[in-house]
Amino acid sequence: MAADPYTTLGVSRGASEKEIKSAYRKLAKELHPDANKDNPKAAERFSEVTAAYDLLSDKDKRARFDRGEIDADGNPMGFGGGFGGGGFGGSQRGFGGGGPGGGFEGFSSEGIDLGDLFGDIFGGARGARGGPFGGGQQHRAAPRGANVQYRLAVSLTDAASLSPQRVTLGDGKTIDLKLPAGVEDGTQMRLSGKGEPGPGGPGDALVIIQIQPHPFFERDGDDLRVDLPVTLDEALNGGKVRVPRPPAR
Image 1 (cartoon, one colour):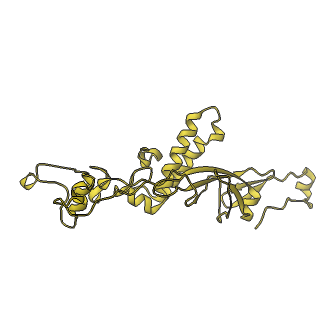
Image 2 (spheres, rainbow, N blue to C red):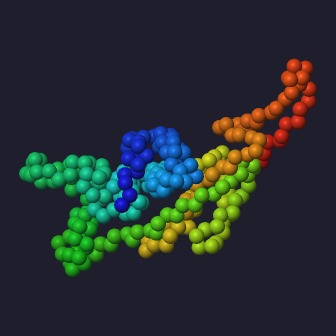
Image 3 (tube, one colour):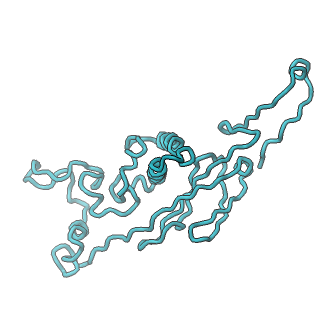
C-alpha cells in the first residue's frame, strides 16, 4: 500500500488546498524525470508525489481517505480503514479497557449496524448462515484498476490558444484533450476510466502537462515577457522596432 499522502507531500492533515498544491509543485519541480535523467529513484519518487497529490486534490477522495474509507491508493478499506486510522469519525483511541464496564472506548454503538460491522470482520460467513449478526452475506467492494500516468508536451503557443491536444493511450487509442484555461507546466488532467482494467472497473489516466519553452516569450504567471534588443541610437532617440507577436487565443 502506498505511503500516507500527507507524509509524501510533507504537509499536515489540516493543510489547505493551496498548501497542498504549493507542496506538490515544489516537489514535482525537484523530482521531474527530465531534470533527473541519471537518477531513477527520482522518477519513482515523482510518481509517488503525483499519486499523493492526485488523491488530496480530489475533495471527495481526500474526505474518504480522512474518514478511513479508502487507502492511499484509493482502494476501499475493510472495517472502516483500520484501528486509529480515522475510522469511526476519526477517533484514534482504538480499543480501551478503562471506560465504564471495560468495554469499547472512543465510540458508541448507537447508529452503527453491528451486523455490517462484525460481518465485515468475519467475511460475512456467519451472517450468510443466519448467524447472530444478520442473514445477509457481506461483500467487500472490488478494487478498481491502477491509474496510469502520461506526460504531454505542449507548446507555449498551444497553451495560450488552448488548442486541443491528441493523446495516445497505452491501448493505442487516441483521445483529443481540451486544455483548461490558465493551463501551466505541471497541470494534471484526469481521464476517467482510461487506466488499467480491474475487478471493480478501470482506473483513470492522469495526464501531466509539460509546457515547452518558446524561442522568444517566457511565461511569468499570467503574463508573457520577451527580451527585445534595441540599438543605442534607438534607445536614445527613439524609433520603431518590430516586436514578435505573442501567441493568442
